Image (cartoon, rainbow, N blue to C red; front, side, top):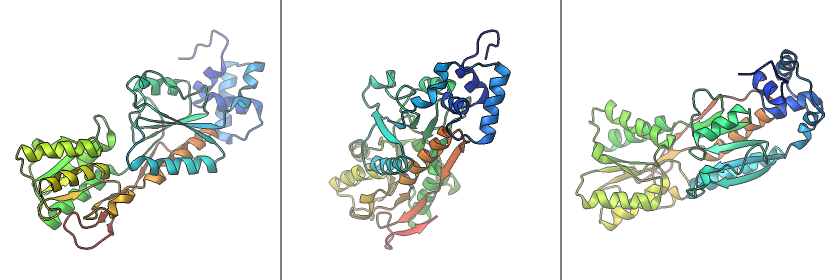
Length: 343
């Protein structure tokens, strides 16, 4: 709530106009283009609040760091280099520098080293910041774009993600329809990870649409990680759980699945079909070549930067960008054809 019985601040104007403080500053200074509809909202807010810019406020536009911040929970596996490649290329193309911080350490989420004090805007990968931190940034209208994570309902924050559910449903349906697999293991990703949740929903819907009862004993945690997936599969095998296919959750986890099955002398795909998700570079080179879902990982990074640049320029960003996935059929599912695609 904005109190009009005290001297209004530039933050009040930004809040009322629904823009960032930097955008208000650019309108006030008039030295950087702002789209007319946005500038009009800012001027209306200034008029309504009877805001009188102080000299200090007029200097805010020159405080731009020309830097974009990127916050990850963990930088590892084959997925992240592709995402980083897209982010770095688009950031450089837009004339910005890139600062990166990983919150992997247990204590790191209690502080936010990147933000309004050293960047012009932030890209945040799923589960990298506590919801309260996201709310704080939203309340000061700091430019923010989320990747693979839905914001709280009250936050109008752009999101870039992929068709996880549709991709997973295509993948599992292929195992059922083309290869008659019915005891399909699903390896979940990290707890709270939205990609994993949507992939599990696609897995369940594929089972249901083909009249196969869901068996919770076939769903275990693989953490999108080779070693965790290896351990999870070893336990299933040692416990004598029967299965004829594995949806590994992502391609990194598929490597752990391969190791565990080969250690148990289970043939891929004759005894157990294995499929992944992402189509990272090694997927076509492992033996047998991995059937998977091709996700536009690099393009997600590029699009996240594009939407953030819209916000930095005082323009409207797209609230949700949902990028298409493709089924890539190779040999690990039992098919003989190599690198065929199905949208």
